[in-house]
Length: 366
Image 1 (spheres, one colour):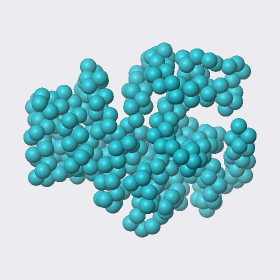
Image 2 (cartoon, rainbow, N blue to C red; image 1 turned 90 degrees about the vertical axis):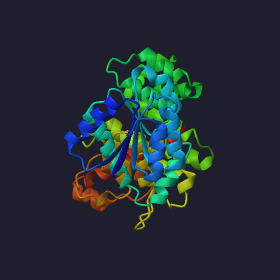
Image 3 (cartoon, rainbow, N blue to C red; image 1 turned 45 degrees about the horizontal axis):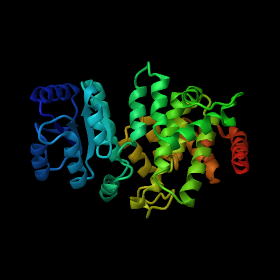
């Protein structure tokens, strides 16, 4: 695996080089002190992952990564930004696939790169990775979700500040208010103001809603709307059946976005759920995309494996199994009962199916 680090501060590059040496990773690394130097090096020998500073003279990180995206779309692009550079970094939302704050802990940097490397194995077809890298609408993290996720990294995040982000998009604010007043939250009173709606929903569920809204609202048409509705049902089913098997927000997010790969026109030749040797499935394409956005590993794995949980070495019923059941029931597809039996949870399937049927009927009546 070949990596390149770009920063105009040679001391920073030296620190990264020492840190990587201590980590004992079998990586081939290159270092450049400017975007122009890095591009010249890439012309000679492209790399798998680029990690770039944002603030650099002559050519900043956003300009540099945009060129990398256009010329080497398979390369995974990671941006390092300081706290005072957030406004400038907004220009990189459509070109950087992940963001890390400066100064960045060595362990976090290595973990992020490790995850980026593992993403490459999801899609063995280089032309598929290249196609994904060129899709302008999706590979960069959706803007509102990126801002919200960054804010919620602070344990003391303020409800009012979060609500202001939601209220900046009237369509999103309407969706949040609608969800906050839905029967799904078992609320006794109506809420008509965004901050109160945010408080009622909770930050974790809010990030799911924001991500879903930004992803699905980029497309239109009956097929997309049907997929959106089924995905919402799958998310709700996952939330109901997760119990002790997996974290609720993890499975709800994974189920909601399980078929996001099917939205990409550039990979529309892949049949949904295809499992042809050497051919990526929509699940794997979606997982690659979500992983490139920096979503947590358990979500990415659940999306990647939910179509065929039986191929996993472990037969433990966890997030992958929950998402498999939820998506299958929401779409009216067969559930892998052999997998459920091996995992020791097949007896729960009738109850899960009844719960799914009730949610589908509720949606139909809405």
